[in-house]
Length: 228
Image (cartoon, rainbow, N blue to C red; front, side, top):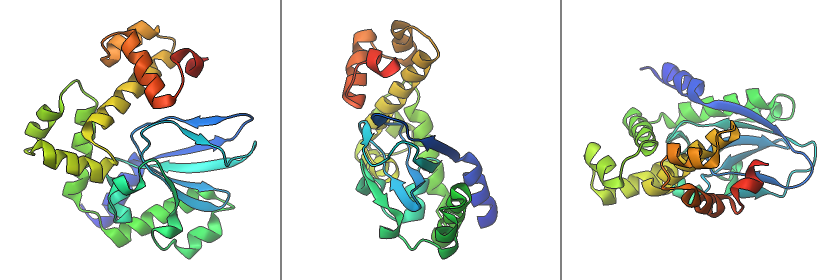
């Protein structure tokens, strides 16, 4: 795959999102991804979260644009292990040189500016395709009902090597990645009206109490408060 085709493919698998801040607390839940964002004209990297992040900077009406990146992409284009950014929000300019055209565009057309930054970073880094394939494969495995040892064996890795690879690609170990994917699965079901007990069973929790404990650990609140 050519460099041009590769970044086009990864950009197509990224998700552009937009959030308008409202009144009251804005809680960002862990979702096992890393994002490039534009907030008030600033480019920011959102590291992978291990617990809910409370956004105390945004004021009502503030608009944040983000590009949710495919697994392993952020560490590849930024040139540093993902665990160095875990639970952090860091100015992109502190990590890399932000292209001047994107800086000029950020206030007027944030989504275009994000694409410009992504393309520039991709071309400069020329990410290794095998690393991105490994990240995608590990992420898929983490969404299934399997164990860390089984995933390691399937990928020809020792558990220690798997831990190092996961820290580098995702920002934490595979067990944490699995727990966040399971939580998001259950939350997605509950948000569609599925009863919590059924959502817990479908997502792979032992019971609803297990789901309740995990939700409190990851979000700092109860399912009832989270879903109301």
